[in-house]
Image (cartoon, rainbow, N blue to C red; front, side, top):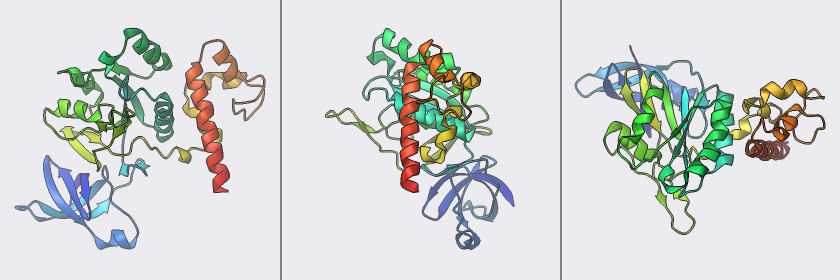
Length: 294
């Protein structure tokens, strides 16, 4: 058997990259019986049935490091969040949800603020400084300008990376620029509301170099944030953690409690007011989700 990684899936056919070759494979019937679905990003063992036609069969799915429900993929190690500075306007609530979920999954996070040519430098600094102070790597780009995507390349090495963000923010132009070809079609912006419409419809991993893969994904604006228990949410706003020790009450949720170390840090300007307000919104969202579930 040969080890490989699933780089794309369509119906019951899977494209497996192994030793710089790509095989089209079916999955053994046992996976369907065991209600296991192979996912893009899965490391697998395959049997090659026809070397000439590059065909094979998936025999085994190796243990997963992680799994995303939507979009469905496995073994991510890094997320690069692409945020448009204009058209569409930056959605920092979505970004903070995504960052929390990335921390929850134990992934590396990088933030790319794109379309920076459409706004004033002051606005760029106001937003980027929030995340730079936390310690997240922050990059600014102009997707349509040649060579800008090279700023992302140092982060890709030996990672399985997905580009995430609302449709229309410029993920696909960045990806196309990195590979030097038109791999994907970017979401179209509606002039009426300046919101994007997704045109990327399936998860695909693009081999970049050895042990390095880059994914373009649909649906990354709709994380299953409900997987995070509301009591744990504050741990995934990583700049909050040093101030937990200053909270008067054990199990402080940092919302309405008095003598809360996190709230004091917000008042002192040590934690961003915007981040804290987004934390409260997400906390309430998780609380409502749990109430509905019960």
